[in-house]
Length: 387
Image 1 (cartoon, rainbow, N blue to C red):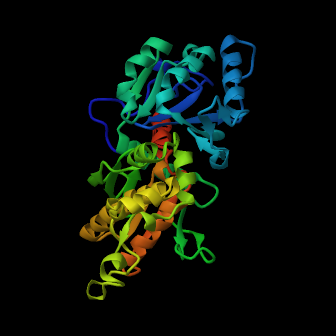
Image 2 (cartoon, rainbow, N blue to C red; image 1 turned 180 degrees about the horizontal axis):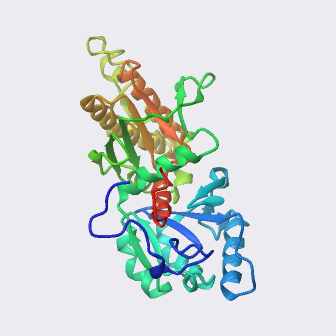
Image 3 (cartoon, rainbow, N blue to C red; image 1 turned 180 degrees about the vertical axis):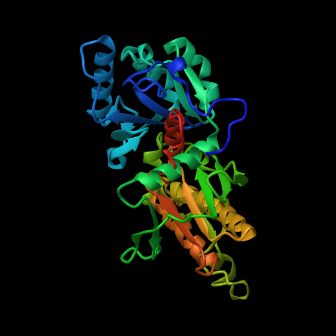
C-alpha cells in the first residue's frame, strides 16, 4: 500500500463508531464507493455472523442487509451483479460476502434519499470513496445524510482492489481470449496472474488512464485518452437515439462497421503488403460517411458498431505503443466499458496479439470496473489486506 502523506491510512474508530468489540475497525455496515463520471460502483461487505440483540443499531443493520442482498435490482437503474459476488472472504479477520452494486451517477440524489430512508446515517459517519464524484458530491453527502466522504487516491484504490480480488477470488480472476476472430474456436482461457510485474494497467471508464505497474507501491500514469466509454455512449446516444450503455452494446452487436468505416482494401484494392496492413483493417473510421448514398443506407446498428470499433481501436493503439515503449508484455484492461462488451474485448485481444507478433496478450479481469470501490473498502481496515 502506498504511503499517504499527511493523513491516516485508515478511518479511526473514534471518528466512525465501533462495533463487534473490535476497537480498530469502524462500525458496520462496511462500504466502499467509486463515483465515476458515468457510473457509481458500490461494494458492500456482508458479515457471515451479524450482531445479535434488539437494539436500534442491530435492526438497522439487518434491514440494510436484507434490502441489499435480497434484491438484484434497485428501482429502474440500480443493479447488483450477483455473478460477481464473492463468498467466504476474510476482511479484517471477519468472514463474509462482498456484494457488487452499480447505478448511474446521475441517480446520486435518489441513492442518498434511499440511504437516509434505510437509516444508514445513524450508523456510520464516514464512507471511503474515490473517483471524481468523491469531490463533486461531497457537500450532497453532508447535507442529505450527514456523512463525510473520505477521499481515496483513485489509482492507489484501483491497484489495491485489483490485487486483493485476484488474491482472494476462489475462482481464477484473470483471463484472455484465444482465437478472438473465430466465432467457433473463440474461448476464454484462465491466466495465472500471481506474478504479474511489470504490467500495464489500462483503466477504461468514461475516459482512459494507463498505468505502468512495477509493484504494489511502484506505479505511475504513463498515458491516457479522453476517448473512452463515456465517448462511446455519448456518440451512440447522438447517432442512434439509444439511452443506455446496454442498449448501445445491443445495437453494436447487430451492426456491421464496414458499412461506416473505410478499410485498407477500399483504398488499395486489397492488402497493403509493403507495410503489412491487411485489407480488412480500418484505414479511416467513419470514412464512408462522406458519401450521401452510404449515409442514407447505413443503420443505427452499423453506426453503433462503428463507434465501438473506433473507440476500441484507439484504446488498443495507445496501449500497444505504451507497452512497446516500456518493454512490458502483460497488458491488463479493466473498467466498466468492458462490462457486457465481448466485442471490444475480442477487438483488443486481436489487436494486441497481431501488432505484437504474438508477444503480447490482452488480459482481462472478471470484476472489471469494481476495483476502485474495493480499494476504498480496504481503506477502512487498520492494515493492508494485501499482506
